[in-house]
Image 1 (cartoon, rainbow, N blue to C red):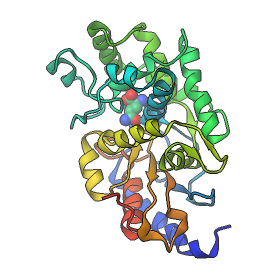
Image 2: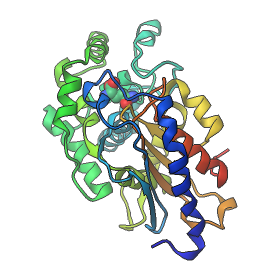
Image 3: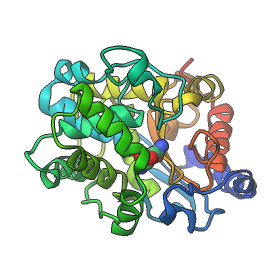
Image 4: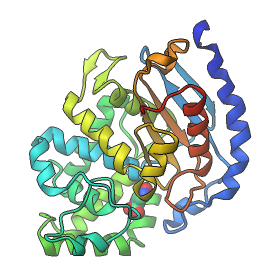
Length: 322
Ligand code: GLN
């Protein structure tokens, strides 16, 4: 139950009800056929505070696939295995202002190094350097890191994986281009298999809220009382979420919400809210993790109702880092 001094958090129930109808302004991702058929009007949220107290509302427990939220986890896994400098030799840290699937900058800027690990080109490159000499082991490095963070092994949604695998022409094109320029050290199909499988790992808003919380706490797992990720890696991941996490809407997202967050085309949003002294009246928000799910997405690939809900929360409780 929610401690007394956190009671005002219950207003989120009202906001979930109010924003759910706005799902109609978006559409489920249709380029991955399995995502198109889910109920578009779902909206749910989990918020986990620094002492593990959590607040859940709406469709918080509906499983959905990580999609691009997995890019944060694979980047962290790669940095933990190789060290940050090795990974930054493969991917840069610059926002593109382009959609997540864009290929244009790989050719425009020699030698074709992906601009950042949050766009598909960068994420496929990161998947290729994950530890292990085959795709199963590489995927396992993500799954076991998730298990450490959320306490359970994520299930692979085979249907979503196959659905995207069979239609992934754009990602194949990116991977072939990366192979040609030397950024992909393994075979194209193997890198794609890792990348598309990590995108198809299933979570609930509770799982991604917990990962958001660990990031908000600079890699410290406040419930297990354990430093799970190196502080530098957690900070790097958050800086990428803020500058590149919403692709060509990252600037707008930073200006209007101001919380490091990563969105995915299945409608998930993972946010890491740093402690803000101005919120001492609501301890739950002092360095918390927020997970949101709403499958109807906007033109940038982010949940329409989910972004509105997060903005309402950020505005009402002054959560912007700026
Ligand atoms: N699997 C998706 C893709 O590669 C992930 C994209 C996203 O969530 N933005 O297209």
